[in-house]
Image (cartoon, rainbow over all chains, first blue to last red; front, side, top):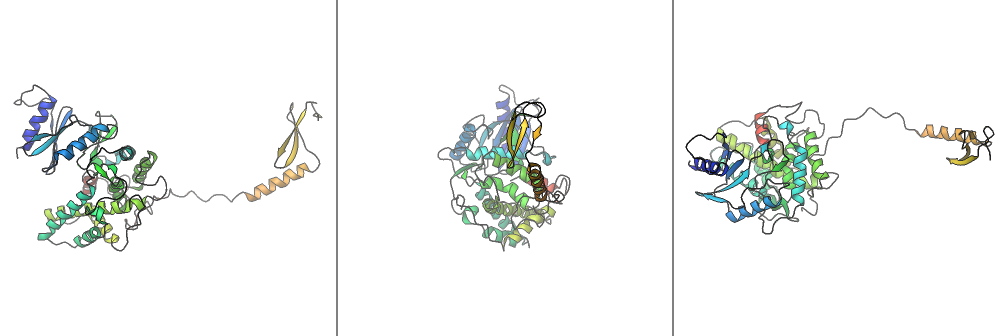
Amino acid sequence: MTLLPALTAKVRAAAHPGSTGDAPCPCGGGALAERPDATVVRHADTVAKAHAPGTDPAELSLRLAMAARLPDALLPPLDLAPAPLGDRLVTFWPYGAPVDPDTPEAAPWEATGALLAHLHRAAPLDGLPPMRGPAKAARAISRLRTALRGAPHPAAGPVLQAWAALPAWARAEAPMPGTPTLCHGDLHLGQLVRHPAPDGPWRLIDVDDLGVGVPAWDLARPAAWYACGLLPPDEWTRFLGAYQRAGGPAVPMAGDPWPVLDVPARALTVQTAALALAKALAAGRELDEVEQQLVGACVRMAPIPHQLVSEHTG
Amino acid sequence: MQCPKCHAPMHTYNRNGVQIEQCSGCRGIFLDYGELEALTQLEAQWSKSVPPAPPAPQAYPAPPAPAWGAPHGGHHGGGHGQYGHHGHHGHKSWAHMLFSS
């Protein structure tokens, strides 16, 4: 594992031009995330991200260009061209202050709804690839199937059945329907930062899944949390209301949004349940109460046909 | 017509179909024969049409939720949600879920 030191040297050089790599850096920079799909390191006001192995450079460049074009919604990159580092691609970003994981009740739901509405109303750049939400859901199912090879689990049946009942587009097996709309593709509370830190306006980060597709997908993770009884109704209402007030096109301005949200929220529920089950199997532990609620939702999906979707997403 | 009290000119107004004269000076009102009864009748009709006292205020309606949602999800409000004032404050797997793909 030589990626982290190499990436650290790179971001240190970018943050502090002319500094020598031997002495510890006075800015106290360090790794913000180290996962198989991404390594993120900060020095002073600069953040470097090593993207997942196999990331397409042309697609990543288009996604960077899109973020640079829309600085009121997306954190703009410091450099428009990804830099190679071994077999990985590295991008540079200004540092932004994230949502405090210890106080999720302070999450900026209104700002999140308004940012998504702004994003969904923007014109996508020519050639921007599809949003990768459904592909991520399919990857979670593959991971579950792999984890099940050695260890069957009673919760796997309902999760896989709920997956099989989804329309092909939601399983990344057919193009997404409707007018191609600019989407984030992987919204959660870790995708928001204040820039400039610590109290600048909120911006969306992480362009890896950005692309064109069904905008309801970006509302679907909070929708799934709400449907599964995890997110309180007040938070859900604040998020959805802010999205609607900002003219977000994914759902009707008033009335029941579920005809549009149903399929993506089912997909995100299945995706989250599949990942939770795969992780529990790998760790040799039982599902906890929250994870059981996700599986419970998958069980209840089976006998209920998905709601008729309106014309623009159907 | 002049006001019998202060002699300023009186203006005619129509109130719910009843013609009344009001003095532009002292604001006094002159009613023709039967007009007081007509107003009294109107008042009685209005009181009758007032709905009974409203019932006790209801809880704010929960937002709609899908049929496959949690049994309490969005339907009853109370007990819903894993953080905040009720529920599993600080539940580790829920806190992690909020921040990950």
